[in-house]
Amino acid sequence: MENFWRKLKVVFTDPSLRKKILFIFFALIIFRIFAAIPIPGVDAARLSGFLADNQFLGILNVFSGGGLSSLSIIMLGIGPFITASIVMQLLTIMVPKLKALYQEEGEIGRKKFTQYSRLLTVPLALVQGFGLMTLLTRQGIISNLTSFEQITNLIVITAGSVLLMWIGELISEYGIGNGVSILIFAGIIASLPAQINQLVFTFDTAQIPLYLTFLVAAILIVLGIIVVTEAERPIPVTYAKQVRGAKMYGGVSTYIPLRLNQAGVMPIIFALSLLLFPQMISTVLLGINNVFLQKIGGFLEIFAQTAWLYALAYFVLVFAFTYFYTAITFDPEALSKNLQKSGAFIPGIRPGASTSEYINKILTRITFVGAFFLGVVAVLPLIMQSITGITALAIGGTGLLIVVSVVLDIVKKVEAQISMREY
Image 1 (cartoon, rainbow, N blue to C red):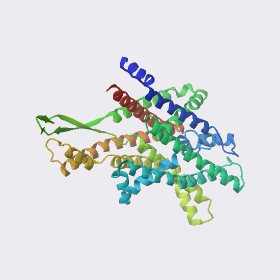
Image 2 (tube, rainbow, N blue to C red; image 1 turned 120 degrees about the vertical axis):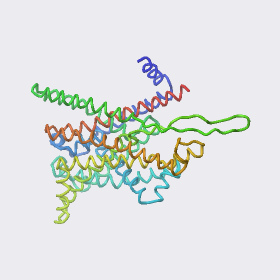
Image 3 (spheres, helix red, strand yellow; image 1 turned 135 degrees about the vertical axis):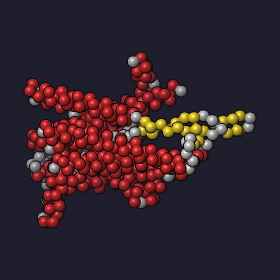
Image 4 (cartoon, one colour; image 1 turned 45 degrees about the horizontal axis):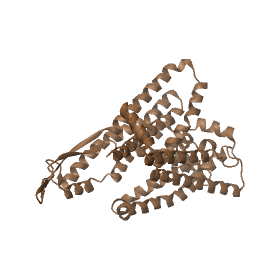
């Protein structure tokens, strides 16, 4: 406890750390102000009722940081940017030049790669914005606007999504932690007062055992996330002895910590982002006067509204994206080369290709455990929702997963900053 207070004191007394934390708070205040500015022609009463019964829009509201609940100018949130990032990273598998740009050309290459993701965000935001506005107009939530007013609204919400993307990148650059995750985290936290208020008004003494079950499940999920996030598989490494002049270097043993879940919370965010597409596309296709396209739209709508299909797709996407994101961010071959250059080796394993294969084999095994855990935690609230019939559980479970992971990430990065200043 004493150590905690000491670190907290360092956070607020160190000028650099204090500046970063204040910058995050300032960015989040601006974000919440934009989330409260609605677009014209919104029927607030119909919107509230529609969001309460629609799981799809509830999850989209998480991505918009609560901006969808008032149909604000940032109602799309950072969903289009996340989708653009997914598309670009998938393209690295098919386009060797993009893979080289992302993995081999250093910081300059990554900046170019990120710039391509930004450019792709704009058309994706236009498509998502059009689909969402069409859906809400058909439900009578947005009143019948003129073509000029519809185009204006579409441009405004696209600009809002790009603005939010920029704020997220500023948080990553000048604050602490991942800006995109922090914005989603802030939106979830901002929705807590309304959810607590709703729980108080709908409280039923007959449901107390159910409430206790949910509380125990939430505590177990939080503990599980912490254990899996902190779990590591150490790989022993020995540095060969080297004589330089009259001194001898090396000969020490250490280890490489491979995390059980290298990808963190990103697979959840990626999976949810992709799951938003079927209903949006179905909304657009059902409005087109073509029998074939309407049939495709009907199929996608059934997929989006069938609980077990949705849960299965969610699990598979989370599982796959955990492997995919780990493969993108962690390169066993590059690690093997760096070990060989520094005169280090894994005892009992030949340097070079054998070391790379050994690390890759271990990484594949431990990632399976992390991916399976994330998938189960992601779909568990959906299973509980199908049993109890409470729609908010699916959204709450996803939110809990994101919140815990983001808090752990921020705490780790703050501790790293404090340790760096102490040394």
